[in-house]
Image (cartoon, rainbow, N blue to C red; front, side):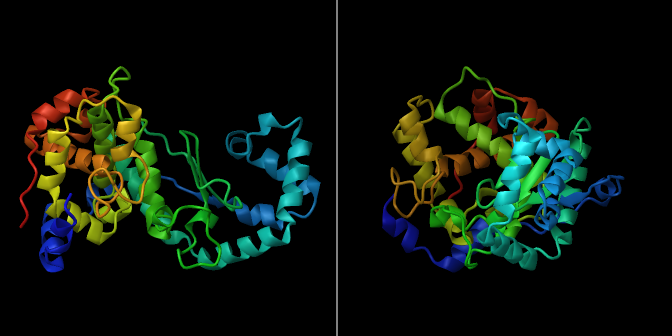
Length: 334
């Protein structure tokens, strides 16, 4: 992409154009929210940092067996006593104590995240009645684990979600670290949950298949969190979203002219799908993961043009069919 194409378009026009596509005024469906649903978040870091002895930790390990087995991987230790002893040492470390104090200050009130999760789970239950509500724990991992999502439990490593300006930060590239903030917690969880409903063809190793997979994941997240800004779903800044839409024709032309859709070389696919500060195969001005963003646009068009339900979309493993029936065309700049 020529850098000038990204620079010369006025920011006002870019903002209006991008908002017109996805950032519409929304309202949550009260019928969906009227469902009864029990959701509790266990602030497990508070219990662990309050423990003083090995016996205290052994008690906590037995009290929370799913957390112990799935998150702490107790089977890797000779015994629970060994694990309890190691946890005691970790949690008595002064640096860990200071880190936890910071987390408690920032996340004293977690009710906003809890409410957002509750609403999200109600939406998932509406579209996928078989969905079972997992147990949810918060924890302070010492920057060892940000988020664990399984069918049984969700563990949120709160230390990862301290504000980007906070003294304590995970060892991540800046462009990734900026996505680890409070507003991203629930969208990350919902996107992770989407994978259990996202049917794929394991024989299809093309770039297109991966684009459609992520497009379905982001479409799912937007459907479950209709009032959540796209930036918290895909992890682009508002400017990056605006510039991507303004240059959609150029981006699509790059994919078509270079015959990328049916590319199967993992190295080439990673250029457009992998984590990176920019998609340098197109331009250093273009954000990373542009293939995922493009896949989201294709899937949106497929759902719109085929009048497809979320359940039907996620159950369709045929990336080629989704692409062909999407009628996708890039939007010309406003």
